[in-house]
Amino acid sequence: MKKGLSFILAIIMVAVLTACGNNDQAGTASEEKDKTLSIGQISWAENIAVTNMWKVILEDKGYDVEFNYLNMGSTMTALDSGDLDASLEVWLPVQDANYLEEYQDTVNFSDATWFDNAKVGLVVPTYLEDINSVKDLNEHKEMFNSEIVGFDPGAGTMEVTEQLIKDYNLDFELVPSSESAMLAEIKKAVKDEEPIVAPLWSPHWVFSKYDLKFLEDSQNTYGGVEKIHHATRQGFEKDYPEVSKWFKNWKMNDQQVAELIHYVESSDEPVDGARKWVKENQDLINEWVK
Image (cartoon, rainbow, N blue to C red; front, side, top):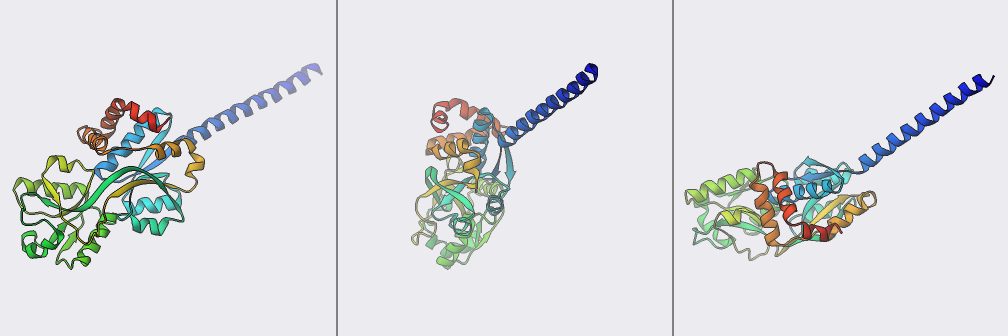
């Protein structure tokens, strides 16, 4: 009888221990899941730089960061549906105003900004001395084949450029491509000292490599100084209060952004350049993640 009772108790003990083990595993899996973040990455130089920078920072803090490679429109749709945790680049008050208007009730657009001195506009090489404002373009449209070389369709700046064409009655077509294709066209044009006009933004490494100038926008279609914000899905701040606070503490100046972009662009793997920059700027990062 005692042996039978002992046997039953042994079975119960095994069952309890197994259940505890399963609960521990479930708890670990849950914690690991809670430590995984999905961040949207758009193929823009500064976006690649800052997303990789945050990947390094967050993974150093024990998080697992996954990139979703999207354009701006798809990024907003994914934040709206909750399929994406965060987007690190929203330009306001002008460039991405359309997305703010459409998604302000379903996506969290942070009031905090990480860059406060951004600029957007049409640029031409400085050797085009007679072209200094948007108003000058129609007079020289044959020189440009009536084309503005653009980048990603759906980007806020592309939509603002379409509005600019209407505002100034430009006899030009905005030709979409990608940022890399647009920059390749600029590189070729500058090398051959040929005319080219394209929408660009600062901060961007291209201004340190080529002599380009912004055209005067007297109607202010592109707006004045732009600020760069981040956006998150609904519920993100509750699920990741620590990371949410860090994102809001994040602040960079022109020199810091330019150096980060340079490090990332100069590395075989973007994350390696970002890791080098993070290592050299740990005091600054400590201010964000304190």
